Structure formats: structure tokens, C-alpha cells
Image (cartoon, rainbow, N blue to C red; front, side):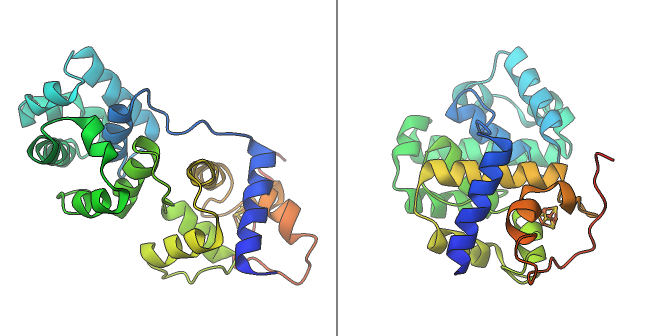
Length: 233
Ligand code: SF4
């Protein structure tokens, strides 16, 4: 069986175990984008606090934030960590939105996906994971988002080398799976769920649907990591 079929099996197993994840946790495409920028190097709880603070300020619109000074913005998003850097990143994105699309988010999101990806990557502070999160979760463009959990899980199982690049990992998934926005949306969310709950530095493989459904029955396949006993014991 090829890697592609395994990736589908892993998805099915995760979906069966965890169910739909209802991502992205944001009420509007604008909130998704702001969350995608703020979530760099911090937990989602801290991002939620920062977004709540932006909403309470009454400035949580493209125009509202565009017209907010960097120091005020930094104060409002303090809970997200690295707040001065992130305030600059938000302002870089907002300048891009106003310079290129007149501040019209709908227009930006209707842009051709690959063109928008290139343009977003030119914005200082937006890397591939953030750009692809914006494309997938705000623009509903079918692109696979890769994060540190993706790299950890799939290198532990030998699908990619430990030093694989973002592009190599993305290519593996996009060549192996149908280009389906819903599938990419759920798969990434499920990977994050496994990574956060089970595939930690010391993984809890005996509780993991990937181990249980896919690897135990194939005794010839080994995981490149020392597993912990169950977290539920
Ligand atoms: S917890 Fe174990 S079985 Fe699950 S993804 Fe991580 S290494 Fe694989």
C-alpha cells in the first residue's frame, strides 16, 4: 500500500476517534486571519484573550485596526505574547490589505489562491503556515497547512525525514490526498488534536488511534520514538 493510502487511513482513523473539529475557531474570515497571525508561538487560549480584548475595544474591523496606533494595538494584544512584534505583523497585514485591496477583505479573499499566497508571503511576518491557514480557513482555498505537529507525527512514523521542509511535507499531503477543502481543514485540525493531546515529546502511543488502528495490526511497522504507557493509567 502506498503512502497516499496510508495518509487516507490515518485521516479516517483520527476522524473516527475524535470526530469533526469545527475549525477554524473564529466567527468571521477577519477573525480567522487575525487569529492566524496572533497564534504564532503561543497557545490558543492566549490568542482568544487577545481577540476578546480587541473586540471589547470596539476596533475589531479592518478599518478599526488599520487606524489603531501600534502601541495601542500592542497593548490590546498583550496576552498573545511577543505583542510588539505581533502588533507590527498585524499592521503589516493591514497595510497590505489597504494598499492592495482598498481594505476590502472580500476582494482579497476572492483573489486567485496561488497569487494571494505569493502576495501574503511577501508581507513581513507572514510565513507559509500563516499564509496557508489564511488561505484554507478564511478563503476556503484547498491547500494543506503544515505545522510542527505534522512534522513530528509523520516523521515519527517514517513518512518524512525529521529535517523535511515545509514544502516537502505539504507536497506529500497534497499529492496523496484529493484537493478537497473540507478534508484539508479537518485533517490539519485532527493532527493538532493528536499533537496536543497524545503525540507529545514523550508520546502516549497506546492511547493513540494511529497506533491502535494502523500500526498494532501491522507488527512489522515501528514508530521511531520511545512510547510512554497510557496517560489514562
Ligand atoms: S502518539 Fe505515538 S502512535 Fe500517536 S502519532 Fe504519536 S508516535 Fe504515532
